[in-house]
Length: 233
Image (cartoon, rainbow, N blue to C red; front, top):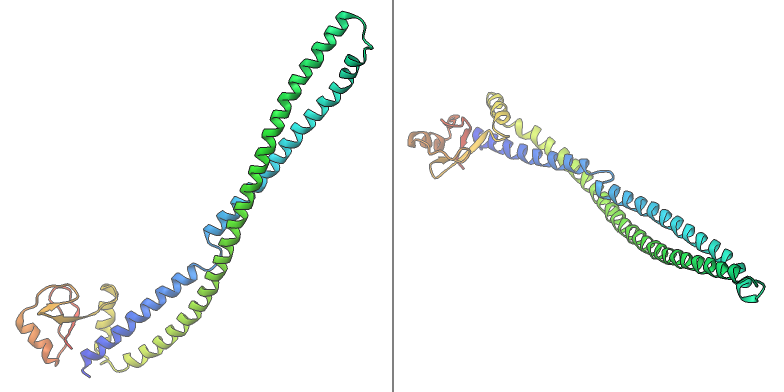
């Protein structure tokens, strides 16, 4: 294999190594609890607080209604047992009882609304808990997959690094500094194939004499535009 072909093979190893390192970094960045899971937990906490508040309101409304019922009961007994003989006192008592009953009706309506709100809060909490459970299970599976992927990528990187050492040893020593410099400034691609008379690195057509020199494979030829090392298989 010519020296140019060897440096092209080195680039293929380097590109594979770059891709594996990027994939590993991405997998590592996803390790841990994702925002979706944290948000689901916050949602459950908010629903729990809403349920507590709804329960408190319901108990308060029930307590007020019960307290009013306790006030009405003795007044009704006095009203209907005939112990009040004074017409004015009887009329006042009647008005008091009716007023208290209207108030009791209002409180009972509020208690009913509070009970409905409590039931709705309970349903919302159960829904949030189901969602949290589903997200938790999905995240656990994802974390297990990420762990396996990291191990596989680390093994792959180790193999590619060994291959790179071996492949770099096949490249003429004088070519390596040029390759490394171009690779650093050309998004990892120091070598470009020549196809259809054009450099596939920058897509610029090349002079025919330059293409012929590349085809001969006897020297290092660089693109006149992007300066990449030209290679023809």
